[in-house]
Length: 407
Image (cartoon, rainbow, N blue to C red; front, side):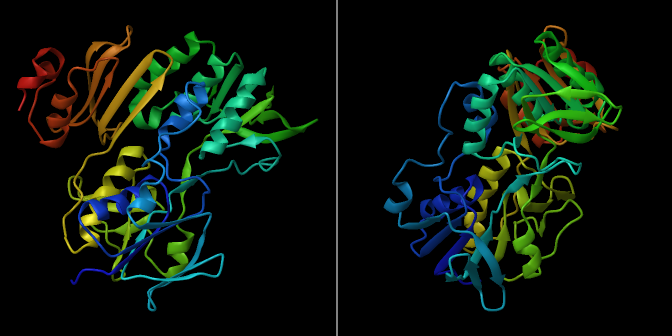
């Protein structure tokens, strides 16, 4: 595998921008082109549902300082949407009529918010949260809203609920699940988040779905539930997850996985010669888990972006890092490492759930598959070792032992 002269990256988010920067950090002196649909220079997404939405910041965390890409001779073409890939000709075509030849191609097209497929789902004022512009507009809406309805009790929905409450709005969260974040955390730990939001005045409408978004005087004005209840609203935020942007890859003929992502091997390569995919769209065969894993969190985009640079230059290294994410809601902060199966894993709790100072372990076969620390910050390295190294442990050792000595 000879080295490339020209690398084209489709997507100017965290994954694509990190890959471009990492190519230069590794000494690559060839051409690097980044095509991005957004007008803003590359930025990270976590502040959009945290600091920016809360009003603690007016800008996201930029991937690099202004001027970095020009200084590194990276051709960053913002406001440019790739429309077609011709694999045989090794070309990427864009909406402006540009044709871009590549020796290596990296797809980092990210994801987009899912809609609710109900009448009124396209009414003016139905909001989603994916970009810095979305976040600033939603914050402004929260500041003036009396009543906010959030559809979806996942991470974005719960973080947005905390922000809306900070801005003084009445907040109702609707979801078909029995408890917020249940699919990720299971019943016992998700109840901590349910109770936290209840104490801060959030109303839950769980175990029910949305039947219709009802038009008001200025766009959407209410949410009608499947049980017939109608919730009046000044702001409706739809936070029911994200869909990988894979139409470009699909039309080009790249294989898609059951999880909706682009199939890549352990080294983030597709089956097409010299074409790679990273971030939200990558359905990655993860050697640690022996199966395909598609992760939409910030750390995965950054980690895969940095890692794939070496493989674009001719290396063949597998990406081995376990998933990681963090969240801040009111006075609760948490970090999660690993990949749990909440339906089958044993949950071991160290600390005090009621005080919201604890570590939750998800254990399978005597090994820690995932760990989440909540308002406890001293054992991060130990938790990472437990998740990474398949260490045999007992529940008692996890509850009462010295975590730094395990393994």
